Length: 163
Image (cartoon, rainbow, N blue to C red):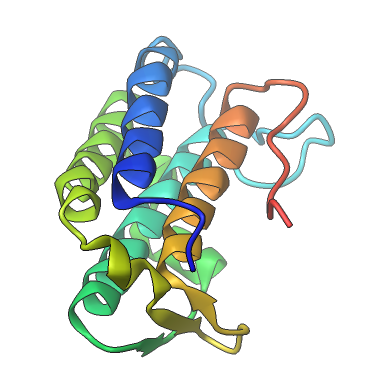
């Protein structure tokens, strides 16, 4: 049995968007193409929010398919390849923030209207161990918060994965 209801999960996603959108919009475009880690390596802020856009796109398909089918078994996500393919570094920061927000806003009614019983639907992503749809949605929001914390250079960063 799932520990969450669809209402809980939709509220979690909605609250994250409401709290973080103003913070993300406040970041000036200048400087968003430099590496985002203190080490000077890794993705820049544009690439990191691009990763969250990719995550929204991939998880949208997973969530809808798992809600409609008895189980979900689908591919993983080649994050570095997607980042390169989309050339997020060339897209202005405000545009990326708007794209990220739009992709996530559309997920709120999807999650809200999934019957609670469907949250136990088994889901396998790539070569990972099976999880429930409820776990997949919760994990998606925790993953998003982890990367937003990194983009905003918060300390501490939300632990991901949660387990």
